[in-house]
Figure 1: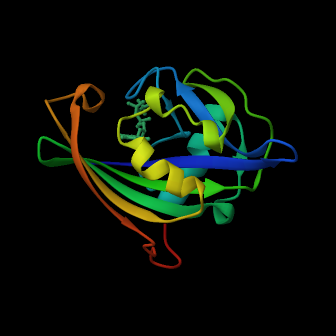
Figure 2 (figure 1 turned 180 degrees about the vertical axis):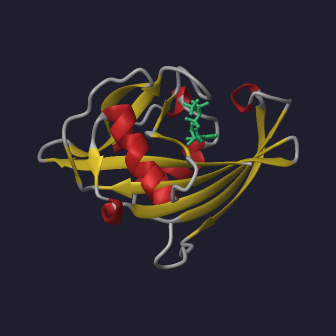
Length: 169
Ligand SMILES: Nc1nc2c([nH]c(=O)n2[C@H]2C[C@H](O)[C@@H](COP(=O)(O)OP(=O)(O)OP(=O)(O)O)O2)c(=O)[nH]1
């Protein structure tokens, strides 16, 4: 099973409310859809380190590992088998300005205006709560064979208000 991360940088606009930094993914799984910066853990890396590295590589923002707030743990099943386990973080503490990379076009989006119709089919179920500051554990079931982003989203279970083990991840 793949272990991955997603990071959602957030900021307050004095007149426009809260925004989240999304990427339009330029290649790989979920190409052409919006998501947070993120990707697969490398050998020896903690999830938090992975989220920091992927955010730097994909959009050029520097995030302190300790400033990442764990918001979710999502399991994606494909045809009944665990395909991806994803650690979700949000943060309001970062430096730098988003820049385009080979992998991503970054875009600040109002949290009330997230383009769920151009995202994975399950995201509207959990991302609004994550952007409101909640924590979530979710299981999402897809069917139809690889790749995951061409499979059909068929079911889910969600638990809100979960706590994640202190000191880790
Ligand atoms: N928002 C959202 N993200 C998902 C879903 N399913 C899923 O695998 N992801 C995440 C897991 C990863 O963090 C992210 C992209 O994966 P990735 O970056 O490892 O994929 P990739 O194939 O492009 O990998 P790479 O070659 O760039 O390393 O997508 C989903 O349903 N919703």
